[in-house]
Structures are given as structure tokens and as C-alpha cells.
Image (cartoon, rainbow over the protein chains, first blue to last red):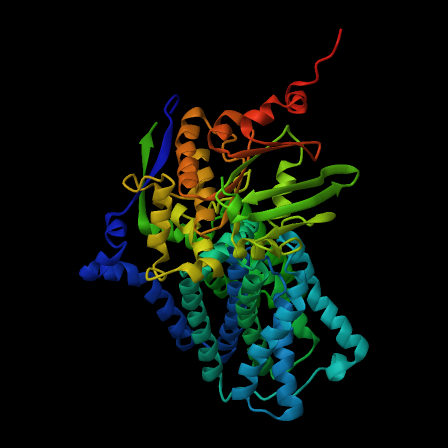
Length: 337
Length: 254
């Protein structure tokens, strides 16, 4: 049509406006509108282990949960605090080694090694990254990315924890159901916990750090201390995933520092929708099974993450969840200009 | 007018160089309680560097800043702010992704603001909106609820001021609050400063807009090439030959 231009107009659905604020609880329809996406996520995640065909795919789900926690951690730190931390592999490694060592050398039970591995690992990661906290943006990213390589070299050179051979056997979970539901429930708690945290005043301060850290400093707030809190929360999730992986595989070794754990969360985050918390989880639960299907290609799978990353950055930078939220909250139609 | 109250801030022999450039050299002055001190000078004369040193964003090469008898040179910026010396930035630093009133949650969350928070301490949103109304954000037009990225510069400058006020500061250092504003925006900013002055606030105003500054300043300090070349009442400073020289150039014999 020559000379006639059209553009897409988007309008909020009436129900979106009606369900903002406290009045939403006055009607079941509005309550349902608010609850549906949240309940949907919970139900799908909790039903997934029952639906998948085999033990193999249940294990894939468990691994997807691990990636989901890493993606959450990345999303929280990068999008809500402005600390672009791509040291997921380091968190996995530290969390895994702490709980693995406790189990292998001291014979502590899983119920104890996972909490200790989570808290202790998070403390170790936070302390080691503390000197890097004044760095911003890409510089912090580069330094955190190097840490897993550093750890690998130290373990190799020193022959600590049986070097390349690794620690095996590590006690496993009683059965696959416990393992899968443990990680899924933790993922769900982490999503909703983080979303709550980001809505609180401390979350606003964290967002302020991302937007303008000098202004936060001028507001009489100890910037480093607040960043440490955030980093501790972020690494807590990564180290839990690490401790989980150690017992899930029954093995602790250098493979815990694999670069996949650092790269894949970024791809999941970009794909799912940066800054949405639930988006990266969705991304991880799509990418991890996809990557399993391509297991035959070996290391070439990293190419998959990169392809997804590039494709989403180029064609859908908002990510799946932001796109879906728009469809859910608004209707679109074409208007003549 | 307030000699008996004593100096709130004493600046002594401050110097700071960047490479070979002396940004601030051997500057000393006193700031009395309830006083509005204007700092003027041509571009690059070291005004903002002086502000950055006082507020801890830069470490001086020599000299010291004493606030209420306590040496504050070398303290990190957040501690200086925590003691009660708040500043605005010449280039505004809002949190663009947040709503205007949420911008003020950050200073209201700070330890200093929480020490002052009374019965409404828990409801920081309400305090923030009141503060914004105080600096002229029209609540009826929902301006406090707008994203900071949607605000024009005039509002952002006032948001900077509100960020300082949220800390209940003892000294406010305004780094060029009028620069870049249109005449009508200046007309809405000036009453804010005048009102602060009436309430007895202690201010340091770094400014290029002399006409507005002289309406509020008790005392003016003139910097040129980092050195203090004049200090005194506004009219007196403007009669100074060196001040005229720095702004307009020396008179030469032909």
C-alpha cells in the first residue's frame, strides 16, 4: 500500500489496570489474573518430574534446576545490582568442593554438607571477590570469569583434593525424587524470594547502585557493604547449586569448574528475559534439555549457547518472558498513521 | 552576622593537582553556621574539584577540611555524607530506571536518614513524596510517580536537591544547581534556595549564574586557576580588580 503507513498500537488490558493495587482482591477474576502466571510456573515445574518419560530425563531436569539457579544468580547480580558476574563455574566449584570434601574426608551426611557447602561456599566466593567489588561492568565480569581457571590451576599444581582424579564416591541422594524436588523447590523459593527482595527498600538501593553508584555513595550509604550483601545472596544460590551437583553426580572434580556453568546462565538469562527473575529460569529449563539432546556433539554445544545468545540479542533483546508479559497485559492492533 | 556560632566547616590550605595542572592550590576559608557561601570562578578554576575534595570524592594532596571540629579529609564520601555534608552533582545523577519518589528511597534508607526517622520511619514512600512536594514536584499531576527518565532537567536538578534534603544535612553543597536550566526553570529553583536560606540552612553554592547567586549568598569566594583570589561580600568581590580581570580580561594600555 503506497503512501499508507501503519504502526502497531499497544493498550493495556482493562483487567491489568483493575488488578493493580489493593483493589485486585475484590474480585476472583482479578485475583486469578494475577495468580495465573505465578501458579502456572509453580505447577509446571512441580509436575515436570512426574511427566517426563524416564529417569534420564528426570536427571536432566535436576541439571536444568542447577542451571536455573545459576541463571537466577546472574540475573539478580547483573540486572538488579549491576554486578555482571560470570563466575558461575566458580560458585559451582567452590560449593561442590566444600560439601564434597566434608562428605568424602569427614563422612558428614548430605543433610549437613549441602547447607554448609552453600553458606561456606558463598562466604568463600564473597571474600575472594571482595577485592574486585570496586570494579564495574565488564571489568568485574572479566575478573570473575577468570576465577574458575585460577582454581583449576591451583588444584592441578598443588594436587589438592586428589588433583585430576577428583573425589569419588560422594554420597548421593536417597532417590531421584528427593533430588529433583529439592532443587525445583529451591528454584521456586529463590524466584519469589528475590522478587520480594527487589521490591523492598533494599532492592531499590540495589537498583540505585546499578543506575548510578556515585549517587548512592553521596547518599551516605556504604556502597561496598551493600554490594557484599548482594554478592552473598547471589553466590548463595550458585553455591547451593554446586553442593547439589556434587551429590547429584556423586563426584567432585575439576569438571565442576567447567566453562558451561559460566556461559549457559548468560544465554538462559538473555533468552528468558533479563531482569525478570522468572525469565532466566524458563530459559534454563529450555536450554538445558535442548543441550542434552545435542550431547552427541560434545563441546560443540557451547556453540548452541552462543547462537542462542546472538539470535536473541539481535532479534528479541527483550527475551521470552518480557514478550509474553506484554502479550498477557496488553492487546495490540494496527492503526493508520 | 553569626560570628558567635563558630565555623561549621574549616578548609585549610587545600591543594590538588592532576598531573601538572594545579586544580586547587592552597585554598582556605571558613563556613559559618547558617551562612550561604557562593563559590564563583571561570571554567576550569577548580570549583568542582573543591567540592569533590570537601565531600570525600577526591583526596587532596595537601591541606585539610574540618567539619564541626572533626577532620574529614581522607574519609570516604559515604562517611562525609553520613556526618551531614550532602552534595548535589553538577551533572545530575538520578536513578533513571526508578520512579522519582523511589529515587529518594535510597537516601532515606541510609543510616543517617534512619537515625532521624521518627514515627513515619517505616513509610519511606510517604516521606519521599512529601520531600518531592517540598521541592516542587506537583503531587496532583502525579509527577512524583513518573519515571526519573521521563523528567526534564529542571525536575532532575530539584530531585538532586531533594536527595540531599532526605539526609537532613547540616551543610548542603550545591554544585551549579542553575546550570543548564531555562529561565522559567531557574525561576522555580531560586525560591527553593531562598526558602532553605530563610530556614537557616548552611549552603555552599558553586555557581556561574552570578545574578541569582548574589540574591542568596552572604559571602562569595572567587577561584581562578585553583587559587582563591577574592573573598567577601558579593558587592565587594565584584569590585575587585582581579575578579574583573579573571572574568572579563585585564585592561591593557594601548
